[in-house]
Length: 216
Ligand code: AMP
Image (tube, rainbow, N blue to C red; front, side, top):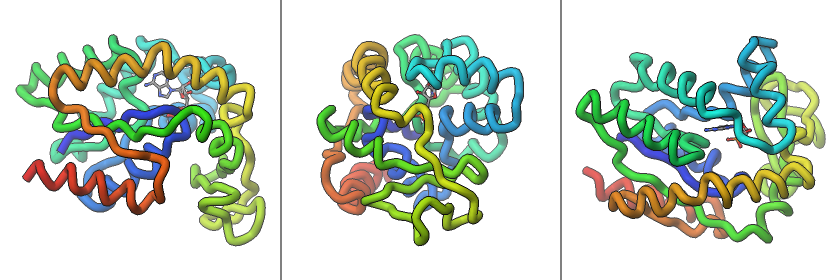
């Protein structure tokens, strides 16, 4: 099972990707998480990626494609994976397609979690993240047990720089310009499926499992 999650930043595709990965026992691969882990560990890649992320811009394809192709060639990916936040540009999608073609493989579905822009800014400014263990919360939808404290590791929760309203506006503009064309790209290949991302997250997940059920 090879799935791509599409959708604007903050549409909830990360949450859905994690739930799919758990249910179908495949790795959840988030390029954003990989970049954040590199930032935390102070690697060269992290230092470079941070310059773009903090401004709501995309990390250049050369850096992003390499880390993604390395990751999907790991042994745990033979049974499939859920990609969350990759591809984000047409060139990224083309590189992935070429790499899969070379091993006689393909993406099963690209699932677009559709949420109008108006909802996005409101949602994202409520997000809180733990920089220590990577857990994410939402002050309204997924509140931590103790305000401002991570349930998982007890460290402080913060509003990530890239979730601040001014950065969110920028990320949405980047999304429409560079990532939204992927909807047409995968639609033309007949593998696009769209779900309504404005409803309860369990209902979104049910829609997705129906789609994935068609695969068997
Ligand atoms: P995310 O956690 O997926 O929202 O990603 C956070 C940030 O990481 C994005 O705003 C980009 O700056 C960067 N990023 C993540 N994935 C990609 C990608 N596939 N291409 C370029 N930049 C990315």
